[in-house]
Image (cartoon, rainbow over all chains, first blue to last red; front, side):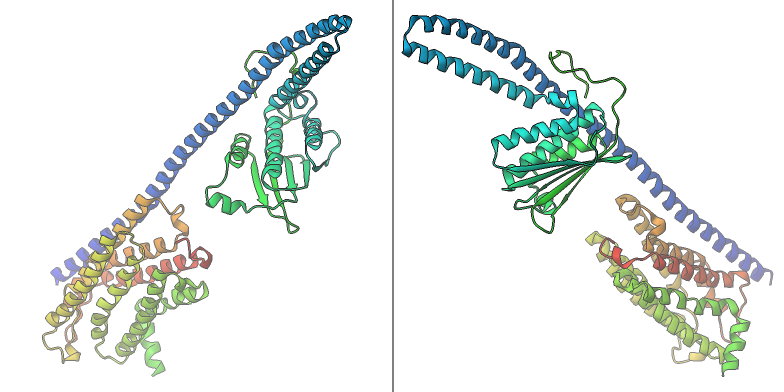
Length: 287
Length: 232
């Protein structure tokens, strides 16, 4: 009888001990899994930040290099061309006095070529460093960009904004939006075979939205991503946006063509007004 | 007849709750369409067969007939269904092959154990519970569950275990088999027709954890969403 009671107690204790182990095992799996996920998340965050830093540095270097080339073009080649033009003007007067028509014609051609070269250098310089953007802001820079494009291409480009006075944003943010707009418009011209491009710039209390819509052949962004066809352009847009916590979304409007919407959190410019780019400074620029 | 059932259920309330609680995960499986998942489909089959066998056993017990034959026969069947769930969860071919081998091996072993534990198989009145098969089933199931837990931790594919249906199913099974593993071999000696031995509280523990197991199944099935079916 006593043995029977002891057996009952032994069974009870053994079962309870086994159950306690089972509970501990379940709790351990839950705890360990959670901890490992947290560790993985930490590592992933570190990698993400590191990649972001790399990307930021690469884009900074690119902008610095663009500025350096623009500066060299403006300071060295631009100055030399201006001096050449002055010399040619003086020489032109001498040739005009000699009365040789052939020489005069060659001189005029040379003067015209130098003037054209000066204009080209100026255009390249402005393309490299959007001075209008830094001086007057995003709306003016986009308008200038559109104006130049319409001159060179048989295109209708419409631009509208939900505000007349677009508040100045941080230098990096403005440059990011400008470069994305440039890339999207260039993509539409190069790949979409479109005749009309609409650019819409919107701002509210939290976000800035940039929408570029064209009436071209359109594309399926998912297919492009799946087939690894995303060129440097689309990747570049995503990389630039990643640095300023922005997002991009591609749509296919029902009426055809394609539409890209980039959204970036508002980051108003600090009190310091950006210094004008001219004369170009040689120090590294902080974007 | 109805009074006999009521009297038996009232007298053995914990055992009876363990029988009828199975309806809850079955109903939830139908409502949440959990049978779309291959593993949960096997669980659904297990629950339906378990309910049917339990009801037959309840009927036999209430009319005072030996029902242990059904208990013995359910052991290989339940192991095949429950361990079969892991076939769809393990990814390595070796683990799957081992699992199939264990099902075949265990079915043969439990068949032998039924014969070994009941020398006169025709005597249904004196039929007794198997000596080893239930314990071996428990050990194998616990081993499978622990292996699956190891796979979960290793693969890190489930971000939140608390919303993962199969984790709840495994937790329920782990608790149930842990509660049974020491009691199971003793049942052979305790549950005899002529001279049954009471095991006290230890007798109720497996039934209590059978109820908890069914509740954990229900929680898991409740978390199942057909739209996540493709992801699992």
